[in-house]
Length: 261
Figure 1: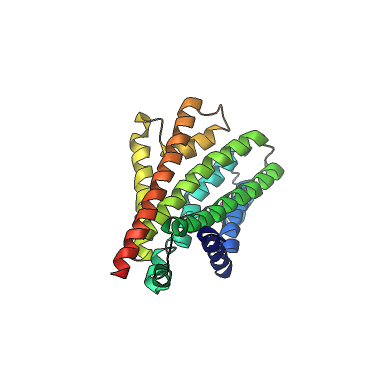
Figure 2: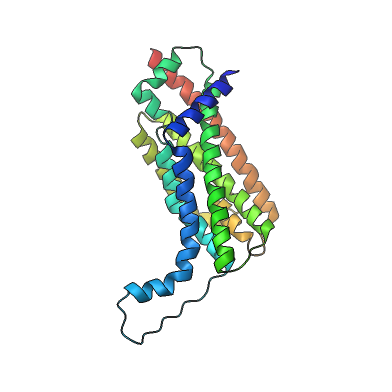
């Protein structure tokens, strides 16, 4: 078996042993279910705990099924991304700090295989979690609010998956660069949050940007995004992920060299 296969198997065992393979998807499924259920039972919840004057009638507009799915994505943008950052902030930095990486560096090691095995396993778990969450949310949305076009859901999911892959890549590069998991988390969250703030303020000036992926994902439920802008954005995202992977591999090798010295 080649090094990549051996290292990927190691990552699989580690994610199985620390239960990331179970609890990360569970969190995303819970978030996916909570949004439609909460929206549906919100009037009853407020009525039971709101201490409102007797006779008060509160009417809430019933959201469209597509709006519920977009709201689920909004939950992932807040809590979901935080879960992924906290789960994988120590993927490389943690190994260096614990001394595990030193044992690996003492052997002939392909840093391409080393970094890519970690990225591959983190990406698989992240995408599995997102899709299980979306499917769970879709099921409850269908039961409580109505149906959604299957192709719209697939386009929505695949577009958001590109964004998730970019986030996972940023987290792993930060983990390779920083000396500990805490700093890796701070850098990852800083890059993600600040870039989204900048896009929120100035994003009207650039329709092609990886930061537009969430907006384009939501647009599939309406008239669809501008296809030229969408494909350019998707291509730019793939290119950025590739460049970050190359950077992560380079940083890992440089950190290993400094550790040996």
